[in-house]
Amino acid sequence: MAKEPAMKLIDLKKDIGKKQIIKGLTFEINPGEVFGFLGPNGAGKTTTIRMMVGLMKISEGDVLIKGSSIKSDYKNAIQHVGAIVENPEMYPFMSGWKNLLHYARMMPGITEERIKEVVSLVGLEKAIHEKAGRYSLGMRQRLGIAQALLHRPSVLILDEPTNGLDPHGIREIRQYIRTLAEKENVAVIVSSHLLSEIEMMCDRIGIIKNGELVAIETVKALTKTEEDRIHIEAVPLDRANELLRQTLQLEPTMEGENIKLTAKREEIPSIVKCLVEGQVDVFGVQVQRSTLEDKFLDVIGENAIE
Ligand SMILES: Nc1ncnc2c1ncn2[C@@H]1O[C@H](COP(=O)(O)OP(=O)(O)OP(=O)(O)O)[C@@H](O)[C@H]1O
Image (cartoon, rainbow, N blue to C red; front, side, top):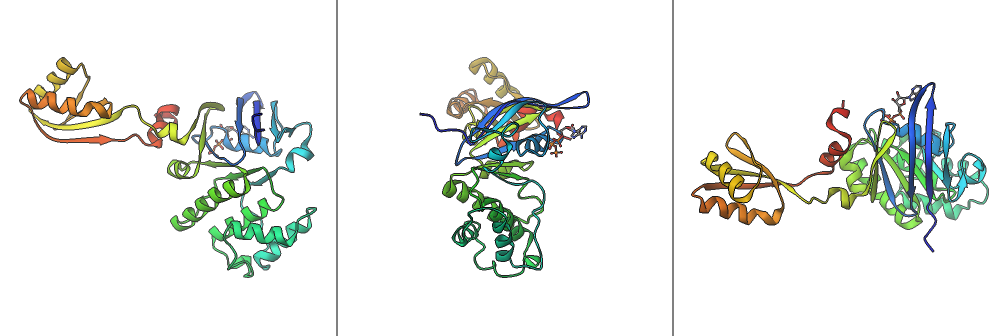
C-alpha cells in the first residue's frame, strides 16, 4: 500500500474580492521530505500557507493533513501541524528551557523527555538554560522550531526560515532541517526566495506563479541538464561559425571572440575535432552548467522577477 501523504492539497482556491489569488493547487507532500515552496513576489505562497494552517478561509478545494480536512475537521487536522509563519514568540526573560516547558504545559502528554529530544534535534543543548533574550537570531529560530516540534507534528511549515540570518546561521538551520526530516520523519515545507538555499536543503520543489503550480520536481531532476551551454574561443570566428552550421547542423551565435551554443556534453569532442580539422584554432572551451536559478527563470519567465 502506498504511504499516506503528510499533506494533500486538492484543487485549492482563494478568491479575494473579485480576484482569484490561488487558482486551483493540487499536490502532495510526503513524510520525511523537505519540500521547497518557491515563487516570485506576489505568487501566492503566503496565501497558500495561511490556508494550509487554517489561518485563512479556503474559497474552494481542501487541504488534508494526514487525511483530515483542515476545513471540516480542523481540530484533528491541525494537531498534526507545527508551523512558524511569523517570528516565533518567546519570553526573553525566561530560559529557552522554561519557554519550552511553558508551551509543553499547554499541550497534553508532552514529557520532559520529549523536550530534551527536541532541544537536541535543533542543537541547543548548551544554551538551553540561558535567557532566550540573549539568543542570537539563529538560536531563536531554532528554539522556535523546537517549540513547533514538541507535539510530534507530521508536517512542519517554515515560512522563510533563513530570513535575516547570517551565513553561519543559515548553514545551521539548513543542517537541522535536514536532520529532523530524517529523524522525525516529518514533512517539512519551506517557503523561500533563496534558490541556492532551497537547492541545498530540499528534496523536491513546487514553483508557483500567479496562483498556479507551474512546476513540481525533485531538485535532482530540476538541476539535471540534458544540454549545456558551451562557450568556444576560436579563430577565425566566421569560419568556425560556418563549419558548425554546415558540418554539424548546430546553431551557434557569435559574441565578441566567442561562439556560444547549446549542445550535449558528449558532443564536445566532435565539435572541437570539426573545428580543428577545418583549420580553426581553438583557444578554449567552457561548459556552463545550468543552475536551479536558470531553471526557475525558465519556468516562471524572466519578466516575472522584479
Ligand atoms: N487581502 C488581500 N486583498 C487583495 N489582494 C491580496 C490580499 N492578500 C494578498 N493579495 C494578493 O494576492 C497575491 C498573492 O500574495 P501572497 O502574499 O500570497 O504572495 P507571496 O507569494 O507570498 O509573495 P511574497 O513572496 O511577496 O510574500 C498578491 O498579488 C497580493 O497582492
